[in-house]
Amino acid sequence: MTVTTRLLGLLCAVALLAGCNLKEQTDAKFGDQGFKTAIALIELHKIRFGNYPEQLKDLQFTGDWDPISLNSVEYRRIGSGYELNLTRGWVSMPSTLTYPPAFWQGLGLVKSNLKPDR
Image 1: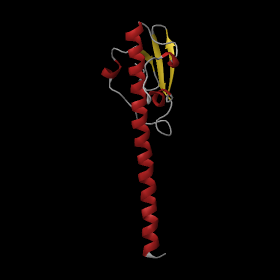
Image 2 (image 1 turned 120 degrees about the horizontal axis):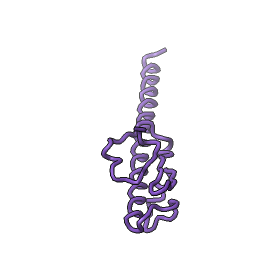
Image 3 (image 1 turned 135 degrees about the horizontal axis):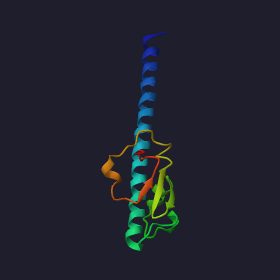
Image 4 (image 1 turned 30 degrees about the vertical axis):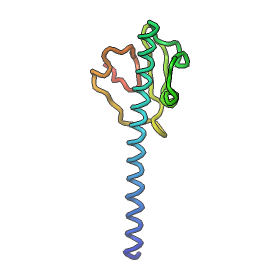
């Protein structure tokens, strides 16, 4: 094998590894944004109407980009609160999204696949 062939192989390997990291980072950023946007819209609905929506299609006054976020979550109303699970980021489910305990305070979000059990 020539030096050029080895160098080309090394560059391809580095590009593949960098691409994997970029995909993970992009999944995390899109997942984080989608999750937070859904929470904001759900909590705003509660402030406006006094209760959480029965389903996400009941949300009013959403923006043109909000359906992108709402398509990346699963929502279920639970009593006086709700469950919200992230289902995907940009391409797939992010593996490293975590939030500090203060993030969850004051929300009606009682169950989530991103919320640690206490």
